[in-house]
Image (tube, rainbow, N blue to C red; front, side):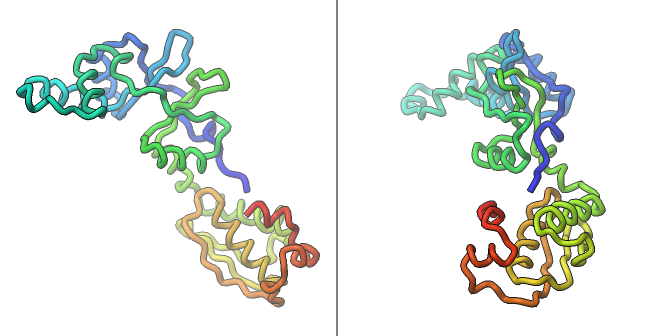
Amino acid sequence: MKHRLIGQVMTRDVIKAGYGTAFKRIAESLGRYGISGLPVVDDDGQVLGVVSETDLMLHQSARSDAHRPWYARAHVTRSGRAAREKARARTAGQLMSTPAVTVGPHETVVAAARLMAARRVERLPVVDDGGHLVGIVTRGGLLSVFRRPDAEIRGEVIEEVLVRTLWLAPRAIGVDVHQGVVVLSGTVQRRSEAALAVRLAGRVDGVVSVVDQLGYQEDDSHLRPSEQALRGITEEWIRKL
């Protein structure tokens, strides 16, 4: 199943900072462009790190902590020490979080979404094979797949799932899409085909959910995968699930 690639949803005109960009200029850029973070690059365009609103806030809060009594600052956690260091930061290089969590333009939106969730970040600088900045993708960019028109989703379900994967005629079963919800109806030869159709339709970018209204003529659920393959469903397809 083909997923949209990062290169298709990323923003190419990236607001960025250099290693020596001043704190105030970073704050001004975040406010002017309505963004919550930006990548920091060197003179060759390689990504060094990322500065976010959180880093700026840590700078401010750490400055306040510096005025607390010494006994209140005696036991400081590692994160607290990092925040204290940021209190003295004046440039992007001193403020940034590093190493930056990045993604390549040929990665899928699914892989990027998993990476964002795992690393708890809101944006990913997109870099080429040499680590040079070529774009940026945000959560909003990844969610753009859910703005795909219903007709476009329906066409992909028919072409990629029915025709190319299950080798069915385009009108073999009914495919209706409304607000991203796919409804599959009609009858297929085998129960395993119905299950595959539902599962693969759910993997099409932009699909919110799949409603299964499929019937089948033959229940092959009791067969081993190798026996199902002989009856029309290849082991290669099953391994991809």
